[in-house]
Length: 325
Image 1: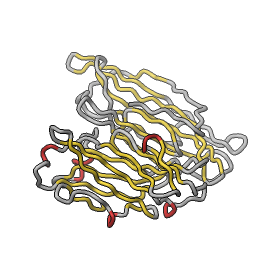
Image 2 (image 1 turned 135 degrees about the horizontal axis):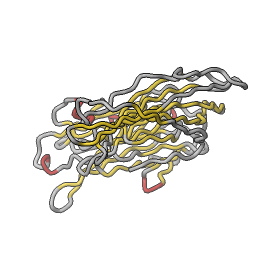
Image 3 (image 1 turned 90 degrees about the horizontal axis):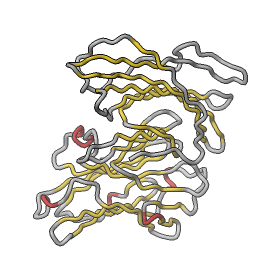
């Protein structure tokens, strides 16, 4: 799965200079590449006319023999300029992106280390942050940096979003997310389910017995809320898959409207000043299928005043344990 930038995001700069460095041996080509140091001040940066910014950085490649196989380590530097919105203010943001990957010449390594240095470059609101993470590919959408780690044949892609305002992680999920939109507003809200089959096994890092999934709620600027789903001992416990269940958003009244087959909710009364507490009047519904007759069971959790309303969650309490996380 690959995501492409859209909307108000503008890509205007992209270049890299590749320098060949002498070959040398590494311990192993199967390990994840290590982050390479260096930030926005690498090279000879400085102010330019119009209160702008200048920077330069070389990229590199190392080719060497590793137990009879050709191994390649590449570090590519590119630059992107994106416009982020702070209310009605447009902020040009320069992103310096250093991507490091390590693989054999006859194989593909989906683990790439991204180091992102961000800086506002014109006479607008000051923005400056650094972020480092592993992903297969990145793009820019909805005032966020979208990082996707592709899974193998038995895994789901794992999606992470980082705010372009401060570089902090605001959301993550398996495979795809549900969106809450406000008409004519760039910032969005996201709800998504992280399964046991997500690439990089994020649920395994939580180390909680019988954990089936985690549901997260976030916006373009901040993480908001989450809850966990655990399995109880029951007659169907072995029949419920660890995959992502079917998921939709359901409107509660005329203040919201579901579109895209329930994958999107529109806030009918929202605008650019909408805050978390104004996100309300709908529910998220997950449907789990099991059994030879394709039986199913649902978990439905309302969203009220920008939070999951766990007190009014509906689900089979003989099968699931659902709680704030």
